[in-house]
Length: 120
Image 1 (tube, helix red, strand yellow):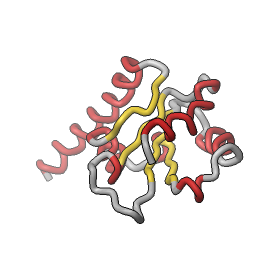
Image 2: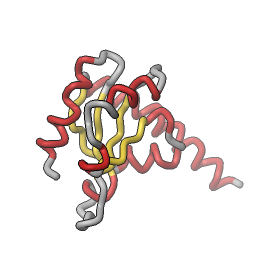
Image 3: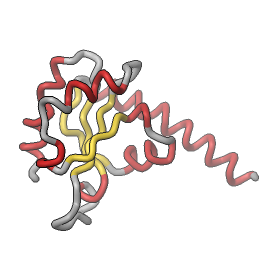
Image 4: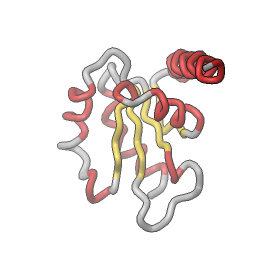
C-alpha cells in the first residue's frame, strides 16, 4: 500500500481538531515489510479519549481489508512510543512543530528512565 492511499484513507481526521497527526511506523517504515505485513498506523491525539478517535475511524475504513493495525499514541507503553518516535513517517500533521514538541516530551521521559535503568 502506498503512502498516498494511506493519506487519502485518513484525511477525514483533519476535520477532527483533537487529532494532531497520523503516523506510519513498523516494518513499512523500516523497509522490512513482506506480503503478510500489516500497515501500522499511529494516531496522535493529545488530551483526547482514544475510543472517541477510534470510533470515528472504524465506520469509515475497512481496516481488515486494508490490513491496518491502528494504535492511538497516548494509549501505548513508553517502550512502544519510543520505538515509534525513532522510526516513523508523518502521513499528515496539523502542525509539525507542535508534533515534534509533543513527541519530545516522551523522548525526554524515555531518556530519563533509561538513565535510571543504567544506574540500577
